[in-house]
Structure formats: structure tokens, C-alpha cells
Amino acid sequence: MADLKTNFIGISSPNPFWLASAPPTDKAYNVYRAFEAGWGGVVWKTLGEAPEPINVSSRYSAHKSQSGEIIGINNIELISDRSLEINLTEIRQTKIDWPDRAVIVSLMVPCEEQSWKTILKQVAATGCDGIELNFGCPHGMPERGMGAAVGQVPEYVEMVTAWCKKHTKLPVIVKLTPNITNIVTSALAAKKGGADAVSLINTINSITQIDLDNMTGAPNVGGQFTSGGYCGSAVKPIALNMVGQIARNNETSTLPISGIGGISTWRDAAE
Image 1 (cartoon, helix red, strand yellow):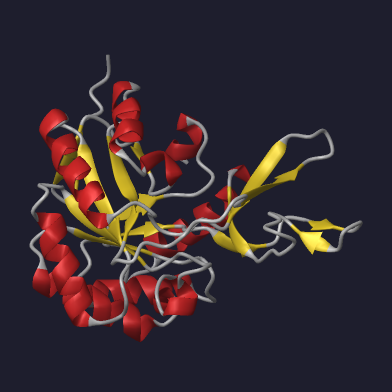
Image 2: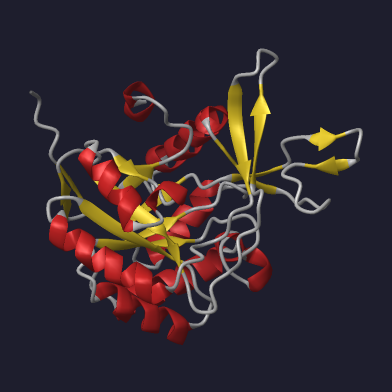
């Protein structure tokens, strides 16, 4: 059997296939199932400060082909709605039970240095392998000055990245938003801030469908809807293009990249 052991920015794992931050990585139960299935690592679903957000239902909708095949999925899910303390306890135990797997923790807090300093200290105490700064969430959190509200402003990307490098010894991965004119500008800002790597892409602003009979969109929450984040196989060409732009640019070509977006098979990952 081929040896797929990987060392990414000093983080070791049995293979380079990691689950991105999302509902499948929101608790230890799901993460353990992923590791048992052979995944080499996970990025734990984004954590933030109290009070925890309230996730509505339904919060998913799909874009389908004429044959009914799901091409892409839209979601309006926010960051973890479980308490920070519970998540930190589970992350700590996960590293004890699975010491050979990579466990990165995704974070999103207000654009204030003290907020980042506090949560970084708490997360580092779990024994996790690194952190991912979620500068890409396109819905819900930007209204609070987080997520894409940071990722769409290069000066903020550089500033917050520098704060995190100042307050933690863990490797720092910056997750970039695709909802921007030039992805290289964001990557360069992350590099200037001291990022160890970037990850991309996050989800794309979207509305998957409109119900013409009821004149509302999907997902429908009490007769209301909003734009959300689009993912699935449909976004792979966009992800490949943006990853390629960073990899080929002279100023960012040396920046390690964690590729995300539309990956369903090993061939997608190899691309």
C-alpha cells in the first residue's frame, strides 16, 4: 500500500485528505466516524464567543439538474451553536484518542485583538495542531463584522492574521472568501500578516431557487429566505481557478495552500 503520510506546515497526518470545516466536523461523534473511515484530519467546525448563535431550520437547499441530480448545495448555517466549553472538551479528548490525526480548529470572533487573544489561548490548551481563521463565511456573520466582512478587506486580513501570529505558537491557516474581485490580493495580505498557509475556497454567495407560486426563495424559514453559501461539485471549476491564481503568482507561489471546494473524489483532490 502506498505511503500517503503528509506534513503540511509542520502538521503530520496519515494522508492529505482532511474534512473541511462544516456540519460533518461539528462534534466528536462525527469526527471519530471520519477518522474510523480513514480521513487524515479535520478542521473542526467554526467556534466563536458566547452567546452561541441560533441555527434556523431549514437551512439547506439544492440546485438540481433536469434529471434531478444535485449539482450544488446552498446553506445558511452559522458557526457552531454548541457551547465553546463543550467543543473545547471534545477537541482535547479527540487528540488524546487520535494522536496521529490532524485536528485544526476553525475560529471566528469579532475584529478585536483581545477577542482573538482570549480564544486562541483557550484553543491552544486543547492540544490541537493548528488554527484556521474563518474569513470567508458569506452569510449571517458578516452582519456582525466577521467572516467575509473581514476577508473582503485585505487590510483587515493582514491585521487579524498578525494578531493571531502574535498570540499563538500554533500554525495559522487563513481561509479566504471567493466573494472578492482578486483572490491574490487576499492571499498576499494573509502572507504579509504572517500566515503559515491559506485555505480556499469558502462558499459562494448564492440563491439556489425561487418558488414562483409562493414568491419566496429556498431555504424557506417561516416564509422568509436569504442568500447563503453555495458548495458542491458545481463550484470546483471556481476553486481550481482561484487556487491556481495563488499558486502561479510570483508573490504568493511559496504560500502553502489547503485546497477546498467541489471535491467529491480522489481525482478532484488530485486536480
